[in-house]
Length: 294
Image (cartoon, rainbow, N blue to C red; front, side, top):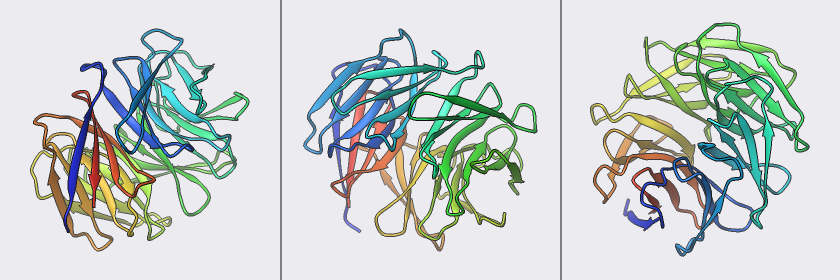
């Protein structure tokens, strides 16, 4: 498969772009965890930035809501934020102090569901800002990324608990132990095969779990690649970032893996998303936004 990677430099070199998502306006929206901004980039590479009201908020993961806004987590500020397509920002406090909000996704109930990595909870916030929190049964789980599954529940990674968690929209929680010990799961998403796919940053694998809890794991070709985020592509495949090896990876449903080198050395790729142009857009913590065309 022929691919081409374009990179777009941000105005502030050390802004630390982290999460990214497609907006409702045909552009890509991303967080700048060191620059304390939400950025917007068109498919032609034009960049706009919006400063957050709370200083040093450290925005991380970002995704679309049902209300036409973009929602994101503010790790240090202990808030959930949202921004309209016109750039208006609203922030909501999380009841638990020091909860460390990290992952966020739109749930099947129209609410936003998020993880509290240091609070050891999963949270739910309505479009009006009403928050409810659910305690995880195992201490020190470090819930990280979260995604909607094909079964109408929310699935999340437990980075330190070495489990894949599941929470129903009514708050019932279950957990499944990953076969590889100390695997360090982070990114998670629903695949085209209705299974849940995730990355294992420490054990250097891509994992797959069915809604019944059956696991399959695939080792990456590159040692110490440190896979971080994962998303479904446009042809039933999965794409993921390799933070440690400076690559973007692609895995088919049968387990075949291909890796693509990012032009900038030590770019530190983190989040990625499928764009309206059919390209894979990704953040580079070195201060760039990447576009992989295939």
